[in-house]
Amino acid sequence: MSRISILDRDRCQPKKCNYVCIEYCPGVRMEEDTIVIDEDSKKPIISEQLCQGCGICTSRCPFDAITIINLPEALDEPIHRFGQNQFELFSLPQLSKGTVLGLLGQNGIGKSTIMKILSGEIIPNFGNYDKKYKDLSHVIDYYKGSALQNYFKNLSEDKIKVIHKPQMVDQLPKVVKGNVRDLLKKIDESNKFDYVCKNLDLKNILDRDMENLSGGELQRVAIAASVVRDGDFYFFDEPTSWLDVHQRLNAVKVIRSLADEGKSVLVIEHDLATLDALSDNIHILYGEPGAYGVVSQMKGVRVGINSYINGFLAEENVRIRKQAIKFSIRPPTQEQEGSPITTYTDLEKHFEGFDLKAEGGKIYHDEIVTAFGSNGIGKTTFAKILAGVEEADSGEIENDIKIAYKSQYIISDFEGRVQDFLYTNVPSYGSNLFQSEIMKPFSLEELLEKQVKDLSGGELQRLAIASTLSKEADIYLFDEPTAFLDVEQRLITGKTIRKIIESKNAASLIVDHDILFIDYISDRAMVFEGNPGLNGYANKPTDLRSSMNKFLKDLNISFRRDKETKRPRVNKLDSYLDREQKEIGEYYYLDTK
Image (cartoon, rainbow, N blue to C red):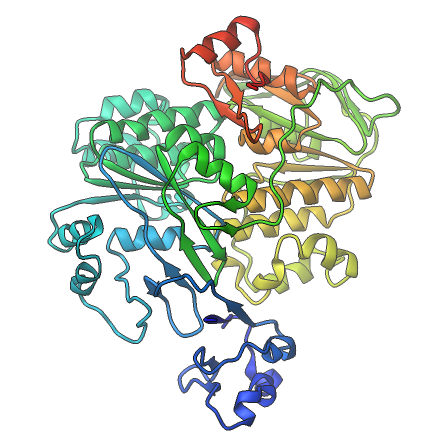
């Protein structure tokens, strides 16, 4: 059986352990070059041809820097490998004109690598990482007779233009200066300026500088900047982070318009409801994050998403998850009896140009309340009032309670390693409880030696959520905890939050826009109404069914339930099901048996 050895070079510290992996390797003792020392880095290199997979080095390594993974025998040679004992990718997706193709899989499984290969940023080496290829001639020969041959041939001859929307849009103000209007006008090659301004609701921010935009506004500008350019292939890396439900569906409409024009579109997206509405077909990526990734056969969007949720790919005969993700249709929940963890009266907060009013309500022990509504309508302000970061102009929060608060935007300017951050900010770091209940679910062990400023968006999010859960509090507030997390991580986040608050007899308030995550985690919910940027009104917590029906009615959107998995799926506007559900007032919970 073939295998891959992964060495985390950030965690490997041979001077501290005196090369314990070499000392205990049976192959080295038999005078084979199974593990040798790299002359440049002075760190060990494991020969995957000589390694027998005994696992002694992985158990002996004091820093957990080595992983030995057995690969499925059916895999062909890799499309690309980054280096000895580093990540490798198997196969590429099949692009076609006039369609939107989705990529679904965990973070660190190769999705962004695929985009970089298809955009020409990375030249595939087919596992020959020692060779420095200067052009795509060997790639063209490899794909001879397939659609990818023509693709790479045209790419090498500059006959096609690739437009790429990046994942980390919050970094755009560092490289793009000026106001939104000038930026979009300058790059408008397809005469779509008015179209994107209308459909992405950009008119109110056209005269603002990029550095003064929120995360959601930056995301919409980034989508607009991609669409107005005239390209052949469009790649969108997580286009809905920080967008509310209405904005996500607007983004779906705009991105799908490219396919309607005959363009080829590739999308990475972790919001399954959005991916469902956006894509024609999908590829699922499976493997071991950070080690190897495999691209599945192309699947229809419904079948593919259901396969991913069930954790089994029938065509490949591969199980990618031990258990299926379960969605349930819960009956309306009644408000609990007994003493609440906190009660708040009607609240008001006034800013220059914006007013927030909140209906008085109660939050109970051991419950998770989600809050949803349009962006710019007061959800974060309400969370800050509960957290004590902002003070209400009128009304009060009863009971003396402690709040642990994770803000929407994650600060990444901490100087030092993740381990240093935990030592500084988590008093319980090192305890058995923190290790088992928080650190392990969020896979923080693999991040300990990394610099905080070098973490990806998903890694920063996991660190921020874990740090918040480690605090002693009565209510845990999370503002958009799913941003940059993949589906698996969102599921783990929901389970971990539930477990922690129940063990502490606490509660949680979560502000988020992912409909499937909200459906999975909520006990009760709050709906925020009003005019974005002008005024907002927060309804008191009530059962999820009533809240979601109220929210979706205001947006004129309806969801149905998938027959197989019971997951929410958005209905096409004015379709038969859309009209039927709206007539009976069931915008969310209709069960299509």
